[in-house]
Image (cartoon, rainbow, N blue to C red; front, side, top):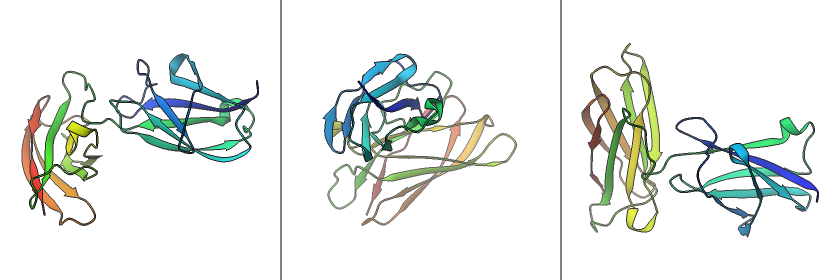
Amino acid sequence: MKLSAVVQLIDGFSQAPAVGIEPRFLLDGKPCHPYAKPQAFFAFTELAEGKHRLTAIAPPFFPQDVALDVPLALPLADAIVPCRLDPGPLYPYPAGTTIVRGLVRATATNESVAGVGVEASYDNWRGEKRHAVTRTSDYGRYDGRYALALVGRLAPETDVTLTFSKTGYAGATAQIRVTTATTQFVDIEIR
């Protein structure tokens, strides 16, 4: 067997290897079955030379695409392709995380809207500007839902500006105040 590519899945919240999940992979849009290795490494063998697009599907994360170039660059340590997985709305954030969760619906139809960009702007405890981003889900019954962690040390109460945007819709904003280490729910309609 000829090793063609090595990918490591990285948890976008903890920045650690995404262990304990059972991902599926699409290579150029077709299912493929790499060899699973410890620490969320996946080895791909016998791939045709050239450029490939790999999609990692690993709930509770959003699907993520990465580019693969075959053959491998040497040394092998330089050839490992990191695949950073962004947490979806079902991600099990650890206790003590400050989280904003909610649902985005279209005003005209009252239907949930998938793929809406959600951005939080806030200051940390020192008054330094911070941003966090995610998008709404397209997981069927979870369409339109989002979960956004406000990272970094925060003041006991923090003012947050939420911005919601999607092509074809007018943007929306919400001003909220969150208490550290709690979950706050913010549903919104976009036009």
